[in-house]
Length: 438
Image 1 (cartoon, one colour):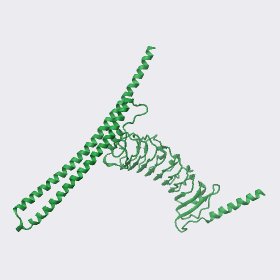
Image 2: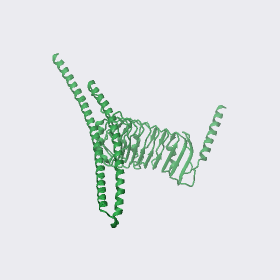
Image 3: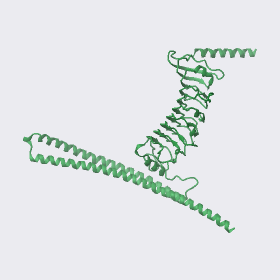
Image 4: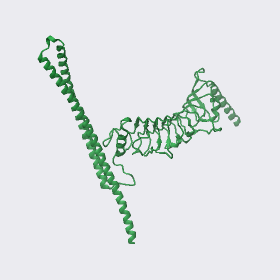
C-alpha cells in the first residue's frame, strides 16, 4: 500500500514537472533571441526548452539550474550566445560552438571543458564572463584559444599560472580583480600579442614577476590595492603601448617607486591616488623607506635612526604643504594685482588709440602717454613671466628635496645591509676561530 502511494506521488510530480516544462516558451517567439524568465532544472532530468530553431541567443534570467550539463546540447544546437542569470549554478558545461557565454552571479565551482574527439574542432568561445562565482582553479580555460575577453572578477582564486593563457593570441581583455590571488607563476615567457587590458586589482599579491611578459598591445595595467613592495622591473619597457597604470593601495618601497615613476615619464598616466600617506607620497602614491627583508633584519640603533628620519619627513611634509599653500595664495594675489593693472592699461590704451584715429585731436602729450602705457604693459608681461619661472623653480626645489630625502633613507638602508653582512662575517670568523682553538 505504501509503495503504491509513493509511486502515485512520483508520477504526479513528474507530470507536474512535464507540465511546467511544456509551458516554457520564449518571451517573443518570433525573435531570434529567446528570453526565458524562470527555469527550474531537476538534476536527474534536463528541462524541455522551447523550440530554438532559427534562434541564435538564449537568455535564462532566473530559476534553479544547479548543473548546466551536456544533456542540454541537443536542444541548444543553434545557440551561439548564452546568457545565464542567477540560477544557483554549481557546475557549468561549456558548449564548443558557443561564441559568447555569460554566467555571472552564480555558485560555479566546476567548469567542464571537454577535449574534442576529432582533435580538429576547437572551441569557438570569444567572450566569457564568470564574475561573482566560486572558482578556485581556471586551468581548464587553456583550451579556449579563441577568447577575446575573459572576466573572472570576484571569485576565490588564489594561485594563477600564466601559461593558462598561453596561445590566447586574440585575447584583448583579462580581468582577475577582487579575488584572493597571492601568487602568479610564470614558468615560461608569456606572449599575449592582442591583450589591451589586464586587471589584477584588489588581490593579495606581495610579489609579481612581469619581466617575462610580452604584451605589446597592453594599454591599461591595473595593479592597485594589493600588497606589492616592488616589481622585478622599474621601466615597463616591454609594454610599449602602455597608457594607463594603476598602482595605488600598495606597500611600495620608495626607492623603487621613485625610479619607476621617473622611468615611465609623461606618456603613462597614473590612475588613482593614495590618501593620508604617513610620509610624503610620490605623485600621490604612498611608499615607505623602511622595507627590510626578513633575512636581513636591521640593527636596533639603525632602525631607530630610520624611525626618527621618517618622523622628521612627516614634519617636513607638513611644512612643505604649508609653504605650498602660502605660495599659492601669494601667487593668486600677485596675479590678481597684475591682471587689474593690465585691464586699466588696456582701457587707457584703447582710449588713446581712439583719439589717435582722429588726426586733429592727436597731441604730443597723448603720444607720450601711449608710449608710457605700452612700456608699463611690457613690464607687466615681464612680471608675469618672472612669476611663472619662480613658481617652476619652487616646484623643482621641492622635487629635488623629495629625492634628497629618498636618497638619504636609501643610504641608511644600505648601512643596514652592510651591518648585517659584517655581522655574518664576524659570526663566521668566530666559528672558524673556535674550531681552530679546539
